Image (cartoon, rainbow, N blue to C red; front, side):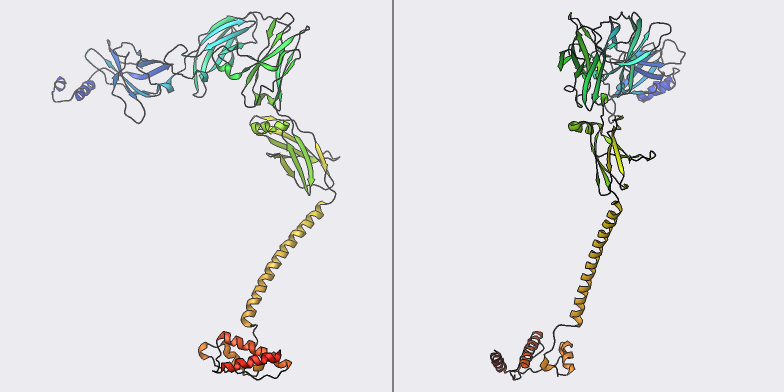
Length: 562
């Protein structure tokens, strides 16, 4: 073995591999990296029985998955260590990039093979650390202030602290304690607690989008005080909303005059880790009032997010007291009112017209809730067993058919939103009577007129087609041109020769017959003239050289006729 290692012609990597293959040291196993915030701890197991063994680690950094990693480098803080773990926080600084880590053992004169490679992307493997909490006992309740993980660190794994949500677990410090869990804001009041009782609690930070749950904070305990019951404080504070109109109501249990100031806080301010106690604003029209309700519609809109409200009461001695806070999420707190309905009878249909809840501001209700409508209609008769029929509509107009003549029909409508799982009360019943016995005659009359129109269209088309065919046949087989009367005595073959081929046509001589001035001969002359014209047009006749004499004779005949 030593001869092989001393051979000068072998590369160093080959020599080192041959040396490691013959070593008795085992490689470290079960490599893991534990990450809490930006704290990285590398841990492993070693099953060898060797003493005086140290461990060293190397790492590769990959900027992205498409490029090769850097050269293997020594991992700072993890060279020649004797324990089974080391802190590598200083070397890992790119939390969204990939890293490879490997370890090997080293004895006095031996080095083990490298362990299997451990791969990681720090952000995906990291765990959220515990937040810091501060507690204060005030008037029978506990005020808690939560600081996010890594609040005082320069290097941060979690850069968006506003994305954190906090889960609280609280219990009485007793042997039979019951644990209670609830979500809290960074600054919050925990009430509904027993007075003069010690409570213990812990808080956990979570990131819901990444589905990460952090470590709980160390347990803190505090003792509540006895609550001072001020009679002039407003109690039973509630918000009622109907068709996006909101009112705050409360109860006055003080017999003396009390003045009230209603204040509100925009909901997102509670998500901040700053103190929001000075950011409450007065509701317009609800300052220094004596009645026990306040119109909040000027503050709350469907697009404005959620709010918190409380009532400040001031007695005759100018001593003030704040009520409990009440949260208002407009689209959840609001209730949908009944729609308005109009019905009408047209022909054989019952027409239903629906006005969405909210009147003139119904667009907010319709668009935000995506309202649909459930229509109930029935025959209003003495028979209690009449079936109630239902029809669902997405539009505000609907029709009902198959009505019975001379019958009173009643309708009522309910608006509902599937997404918010909300529904309104039913509207008032609207009733209307169908006409007496006009349903069947109207249907028959309508059917007759439709059939009559179709028949007329078909008959017109058929007559037009037959007429066109008749004209074609008459033109081909029965031409309108008739021969002159003065040549009727000609042989039949003369006329038949008109339709013979041009090469076989006979040529006839045309001469003018001296007319006798009679009414009949006038007709014969005209016929001859027309026949002559036709013959000249067809090109089948020839004339004698004495054409001038014929023309003179024609002119003489025409003058005599005049």
